[in-house]
Length: 262
Figure 1 (tube, one colour):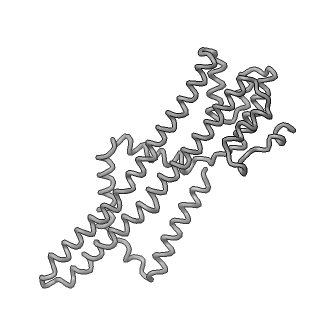
Figure 2 (figure 1 turned 90 degrees about the vertical axis):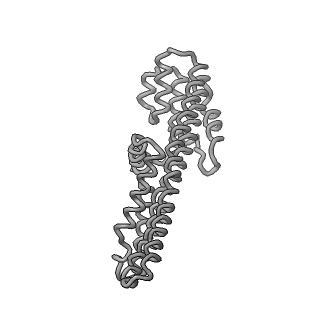
Figure 3 (figure 1 turned 180 degrees about the horizontal axis):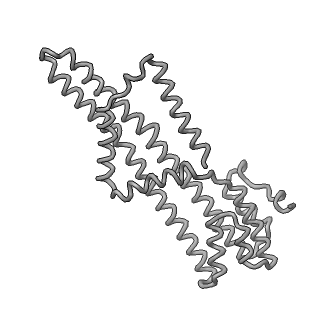
């Protein structure tokens, strides 16, 4: 469970709720079924036109798996695991046993291909790097879909505003003009509010979250691929650690002495 994402969503809800309750004693004025229908219905319709429905349903799974259930990448533990496995490989431990001690799926996948011994090591490294790039592109497609979705709610909010203004102006000369001004203005303003909230507190932040996690996963996989390459060369653990630390900022780097002393 990604507690940081949950905290972020809770903070967003708290700020929104706090703003609404502090602005008025009657928060019911912020609810309008027509405005909700225009924004949510319009957004869903536009997304369904933009992407196949199967992809739209997939996005909900992406949100659950990668945003709410996803874990923040720990580069130090990644490098530590690579050092430990690499050192055991260098001293002759069978690959089958190394897989049992592997904590990362991509690394375990590489070890599995090494154990299968179907392709040579040079080709194996090419396959790993191709998978890294392809996975990055596929994940970025999901990120871009969320970002594309983010432009629809404000647009339909403006459409609701336009509808409300048309209704307002069309009834200004009637006998019941004063009775229609309030509901029409409500649709005008609240629809815009709904569009801004849905886009800027939900959809766009999810897209940014996914993009950030995709870049973290990409870097982690690059570290694993380089560590695997150095492992095949039976590189000394100190050199391997320093080479992998080069991917990270100084504050994020692993102190390899703590790993080797264990």
